[in-house]
Every structure is written in C-alpha cells, then in structure tokens.
Amino acid sequence: MITALAGGVGASKLLRGMVEVVRPEDLTVIVNTGDDLELFGLYISPDVDIVTYTLAGLVDEERGWGFKGDTFNCLEMLSRYGHDTWFKLGDKDLATHLHRTLLMKRGYTLSEATAEICRSLGVRSRVIPMSNDRVVSMVHTDTGTMTFEEYLVKHGMKPEVRGVYYEGADKAKPAPGVIEALDEAKLIVICPSNPVVSIGPILAVEGVRRALREAKGRVVAVSPIIAGRPVKGPADRLLKAIGVEVSAYGVAELYRDFLDVMIIDEVDAALKPRIEDLGIEVVAAPTLMKSLEDKVRLAKIVLSLG
Amino acid sequence: MITALAGGVGASKLLRGMVEVVRPEDLTVIVNTGDDLELFGLYISPDVDIVTYTLAGLVDEERGWGFKGDTFNCLEMLSRYGHDTWFKLGDKDLATHLHRTLLMKRGYTLSEATAEICRSLGVRSRVIPMSNDRVVSMVHTDTGTMTFEEYLVKHGMKPEVRGVYYEGADKAKPAPGVIEALDEAKLIVICPSNPVVSIGPILAVEGVRRALREAKGRVVAVSPIIAGRPVKGPADRLLKAIGVEVSAYGVAELYRDFLDVMIIDEVDAALKPRIEDLGIEVVAAPTLMKSLEDKVRLAKIVLSLG
Image 1 (spheres, each protein chain N blue to C red):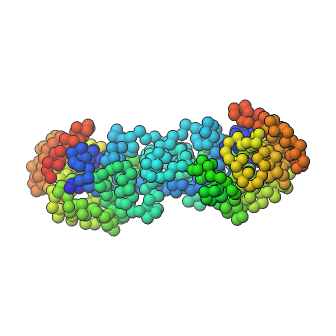
Image 2 (cartoon, one colour):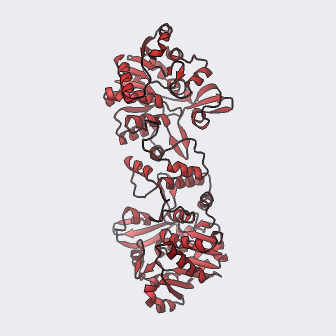
Image 3 (tube, rainbow over the protein chains, first blue to last red):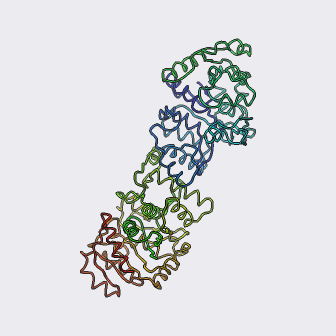
C-alpha cells in the first residue's frame, strides 16, 4: 500500500507515472484542499479535481488541469453577464462542480462527494481530501491579503508575498481515512508539489505531521525545486517569504522531522551532503517530468525506495 | 406601445418578426413561467429564455431554443455522473441559469433577474415574467401527474393527458409592470403559443384576464392551430383534454371574453363565420412561419390591426 500527499499539477505528473507501475487499487492520495473555493454558487476543489482527472486518464495534460477536450462556452457567457472569470472553468469541469455541490447540499461530506466522483469516473485509487473542514491558504502580499488561488490566477503571481497562513487549519480534522492511510502505508510519497501551499496545508491538519513522524512505512519526497527554481508556479517566492532556502535543501528542512529519503534532481547533486546532514537519505535522479516515460521512470525510482 | 403575451417557440417566431417592424423599445413581452423548473440547483425559466435569446438575436433558430452555436459538454458529463439529463441544457445556456440563480440568491426577483439578463444581452424590449410567484403547469395523465415540461420533454408527450392545472396560480400576483403593460398598450398580441400551457398560465395570474377584458388597446390573437393541428407541440392533446375543439375556433372560445381579433390561417377560412359569431373579428392570413420573411409578413399583419 502506497500513500501519496499531493497538490495539483506537479503531483499529478508523478501520480500519472505511478499508476503505470503499481495497481491503482494500492494507491491512496491525500490531496490539498487549501485552494478550494466557492464560485458561482459552486464548490470547487482544484487540486482534488486535477488528481481525480489525472487518475481517470481524463486530464488535459497540456494545461495540467481540467478535462482534455473541454470547452469554455459557459465561462464566456458568464463573462458577458458581467462576472469576473479569472478562474478558468471548463464546461465539463462545471459538471463536476455542479455534481459535487449538489451532493454536498444533500449532506455528503467533501470526501464522500470525492469518492462518488471517483467512482463515476472509474478511478480505482482512493482520493481523499485532506480534511472535510474548510482550510484556506492565504497569502499576505504588498497589495493586501488574498487567497493563494487569487494570488496565483487572478493576480498572476505579481504581488510580492510577505507571508502565508492556513486559515481554519487549527480547527481542521483529517478526513476519514487520512491517518489510517498514513499508518498503514508501506511507502509514503510526498509529491513534487509546492511545499508551502500544497503540502503545507496537509501537514497543518491535526495529526498528519505526527502520523508522518510515526509512520511505519518510509517517507520519500521528490523535490519540486530543481536548480533553485520550481518547475512551475511560485514555490520560490513562497519559500523566500517564509524564510526558507529556495532549493531541495530548503524543502528537506521543512520535511526534516518526518522525511526518510529526499529525491533531488541530478543537477542538484551538490546539495546531497547538506541534506544528508539533516539525517535524510538522498537520491539524485532525473526529476523533470515532460513525457510519460519521464513520469514512469521517476515513479519507478520512488517505488524502489519503499 | 405593444404588449405581447408569449410562451416559447411559437411566440418567439412572431416576436422575431415584430422587432423587424417596430422599435424594440416599443415592445413589452409578458412571458409564461409555468414551465419554470429547478435542475442541478439552478433556476431555469425556459420560455423567458427563449424569448430573451430571440430578442437578443442569439437564439438557435433551428431548434427554437437555446443559444445558437452552443455545446452540451457539461450536460454530457452530468450524465456520466449519473444525472437524468432529459432537460437539454447547453453550456452557454448554463451561464444564464447560473447567473439568474446567483442574482435570485442575492435577493433579485425573477423579473429583476430577467431585466438584468436582458440588459447584458442587449435586449431593448421589455421582457417580464408573468409573475414572480411560482406557478407550475401540471398535467394529469394516464401514467400519473407530472409537470408539463416533464410530460413534453422527459416523456415525449406519450402519456395520455386527462387534465391540466396551474399549481400556485390562485396565489400568484402579476410581476411588476404586467398589468400596466396591458393597460397602456395600443395593441395587445396573444402570440401563437399553446393556449393551455403557455397562454393559459398567464391568464390565470391575478388581474391579467380582467386587464385584458378592460384593455383600451385592441387584443389580437394569432391562432397556434392550423388545419386542426398545432404547428409544434401537444396543443391538440391538451385542448382535447380540457374539452375544447382543436381548431382556431376552439382557441377563440378560450379567449372570447377579451379577444377583439383572431388571425387564423388561410386554410381555416371556413371557420370565420363561427368565430365571428363569438363577437370576434377574423382575419385569414398565411400564419405558418418558416422563414424570416414569413415572420415579418405576419408581424406586419398583426401590427396593422392595432
């Protein structure tokens, strides 16, 4: 049994590779919900959707999110109706949000709604949102405090980030199955997701960090930072904002209390001794995932460490 | 000033012609809401939408409803999620329903939301839903009682209709502007819509029938029945079910207490004396509207009677 902690795009690339080499049934993914938001009266869970669509083989691999072959006709009309359409909602994607919102209005928790969506889309791995309680990743910037999703999409990462916090995290209980999946896993994989706003919120949920520290399985992380830069997104700006070195070493520091193995990119091999000094084993490997072959190769390396 | 009473497809054809020959600003359309329904948590007003899209020049003229060039990707996914998708919702169309639902959640009445949608789509005529109170056209059939919309779309008009009633009509007040539009009109047009489930619900709203009887302007109806058959839809079955002759004469009987002029099709010229016996003036004209020219020609005849 393998349990992965995942954000959105970066994580889904590795997960895409993993389901090629393990039975999907043997994989549980605990997903960040710190970017969840309500728009047009609909409950939207961006990272849960990216992971679900990826595992269903339906994700738009080019964009990294949404359904492949989706259209944006509804959004275009919403814009004509005067709505701010900074968040890109595809037409098929809308069905997920409508369906989820309907289920939740009927009393389903987010994790129950997610399980139902996975079932409909033929996903055989377990996808568990980190919590059924609302946690929102917020960033303090020079132009005000906003949600991370607004900072990323609406403001195009332009404001200067001064700090990050997870609103609601102090009261958030792990969703059913989260702690069990960590306890029972032979291997726990921290996906190459943003350590601050993708993995960070999951770690902030009650009991998660302790379960990782006490895990029987090995905990293996893949660094999302290669040569001092994130593959995508603003991990560098966020790490800087919280005073952490923008490198695989900085990420290892954040995870040092529970991490057994850090997979860093070959180009970062020089960081190996410093990370090992934290008591963490290091494996240097090609970690940039462009093709399916890249994803499968990295997944195999991760799995070999279990 | 011209005021029209309208249902969906049949009415919109005539209205399409009318806005070619009158200033759109001079036209007020009072629209049936007896087919309104809630689906996927969204408030849907089928006839209001058909009329609005038609007046905006955006309707799919082939189908008679929805936006031209719309796609159905969201609906297809909703079906995959296990939803019953008997009601055809286009992706652009969904934006209207999302927008309307959001406005109504914010406290807009249906008529206020309709005015806002018209404004966004550049409709210069006034479109007023008959009532802001909920009225639902229900049909008793041999397989049970259902909404007219379910009978029409979900059950494809297959059950045998035994009766029709308008749930909520006894408590429905006219929307703001409805009675005034009837009082002030120089010409009132009863569109060639289903007399039982399109015009009938409007007439059942408090004060509407009296305002029509007492109208200063002339009241002119276009028969939706040509040669004993409706152009589209189940008007014949519904007229039969309520014991009314399936002909322009039967329709005239339903409207006899307020109708000044009935426009019947040329092929029905033989009905003229019988309708005149009801005290109603009769004009026989080509009433089948296929091309824009047909619509404009009929609109001109209607307007010449004002």
